[in-house]
Each structure stands twice: as C-alpha cells, then as structure tokens.
Image (tube, rainbow, N blue to C red; front, side, top):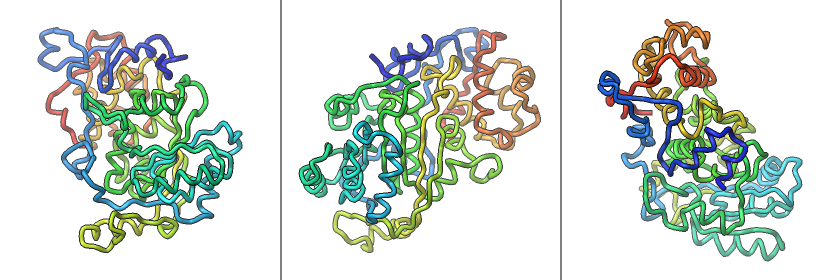
Length: 397
C-alpha cells in the first residue's frame, strides 16, 4: 500500500490514484478565462504546471552531464564528523536509526556513524570511492550498504522510463525499506551537501516530490540534514522582514517543513574532489570561489500538519501556481492577485483570513499563503474556484 496515504483523510488517500507528475483534483475546479465564460468545466490537471526553475540556471530542468564537470565537497574534519553523527542520531536507539548519506566520498562521516552503531546507506556517485566505503563495513563489522548512484538524480521528473539504478522504488525495495504513515515518526534521515551548481534546482525537485508524496516521500516524512550555501540558507529562512530575500522557495519550504538552523561550518572543514584532482585548472576557476565559501547546516523536517482536506497531494500544484503568481508581481495588491486567480469573492476571502485588500504579498508570511489557499478551496460560493491564465504558465521562480 502507498505508505504516506495510510492514516490520511479519505480524500488525501486517493492521491495514490494520481500517477507521477500528475494531479487529480476532487472538490475543486479550475478553468481558463475562455472556458470559464463558456462554463465548460475542466480539471486543473489538464494544464498541470510542470516544475519550473530559476532562469539563472541552465535551460534544461535535468542535470545529468555525461561526466562530472563540477567539483564535489566531502566532510574532511573528524571532529565535525563526530558532531554530525551525534546530531543525526540524537537520543534514539542507534540500532534502529537509518541514515542515508549522499556522496560520502572518503567516508569520514560514514565511519563516525558506523562507530556510533547507526545503520548507514551510502549513495556514492563516484566509483573510485566505493571500494574504500565497502571496506569500512568489513573492518568495523557494521551495518553499511553502498549504492553506486547519485542520490540527487533519483526519480527524474517527466521521464516515462526511469533506469532501475535511479528508481527509488527499486532501490528501496532492495534495501527492505518500508513506507510508514505520514503521521508516524521519521523513518529515515538523509545527510548531504548540496552541489553548488545545481543547488537551487535540487531544492525545487525535492519540493515537488514532497508536496506530491512521490520519490522518497512515498515512504513517510523523510528528514533532510543538508549543508547549503549562504545564499540558499538565507532564502530558505527568509520572511517579509527581509523582502530582498523573500521568495517562492521561502514560502513553499516553510509551509511544508520545520527548518532548523544548526550551525555554520567554515569551508576548511571540507575536502574538494575533482576528476583530475586539480581544482585550479581553467574549467574549474568559476567553481573555486564558491568552494571557498562557508556552508550552513540545516535540519528540514516535513510537518505532520502539512496536508489537510484543502491542501493535499491532489491539488498542491494549484497552491504552487497561486504562490508563483503572487510573487510574479510583488508590488500588486493582494486583492488584484485574487481577482486574477479565483472567481470567489476576494473581499470575503480576505476578511476570513484577516488580510487587508490593499496589502501586498510582501506582508504575508508563509502560513498566510496556506490559509488563503485553503479558504478559497473550502469556499462554496462558486462552481469554479480557480482561473488559469496561459500567460502565467512560464512565470520565472
């Protein structure tokens, strides 16, 4: 059975009927302005929003270069590794704690986790590190599985055929990892250092998986423990108090998860790996500066209360669309956004959520967006709840 559906309200449990990358809306409707006028009802899935990424990134939403073109960072400080192991394991029985480590490289943290008694699953994309990682299991007589795979490329979206080595269903079944209800505890903790070049894109990919309960989130509320750049750290935790940093990512991540800042770590605590071992060579000069920046360690835990009767894996794409639309014109009054997005009476909706019609979205906190969306979804004033405008489909995020 589809794990996260267990224990959810019946409407949410039906999300298992929706295939990857699709949505099936119940109790909600949407139409283009033309369709609305013609009273031709259609499901929002007919114009399902594909994941859109920041225009500052590469054109393609997929990042699978033929060879490793970017350097990767690994834990190099043993003291840092011990501290991370304590943080990851906390006070839980280590024999029951599963830690999935992304690209452990030389295995400094892997060794610390194994010595503490944790069960470790290492996803390593670079073949040269795998023999050493496997030797840790033999030398320490510990519970370690090493998978030759880049974790950040699991379950690529919009591809009909996924190779078994990148299919989380195949991998997790082989690892005997079972799905647990969304309301249960944390079944797996993931540790990783986000690759600098694709950092933002990966954060978007994880968001789509989280809200749709696909990929790793089929198995429950997976906790992420990540080192991120200062830029993305500030973006993740931004609120209206920092309008220059407040963004779509800020809203969607904070609505979905509790984000806890652990500490900042200097760049000297990490080693850098490249295919030829020479970071200073010409094609790496652009990455050299970013590799010498401090990293921020954050713990990201999905909220038990994320899904409700009015926000679910069935209609999260409409919520994404609403937030993206609002940030497309930051200075516009909230009421103007609502008039463009929904057929429901905007004055009444704003009254219910206690927001001023003349205020802008830069005065709305992340939970305000969720309350606004859920209030519109629960409204019974209109057959059509949402209006889709084709010109908004390509809003940059």
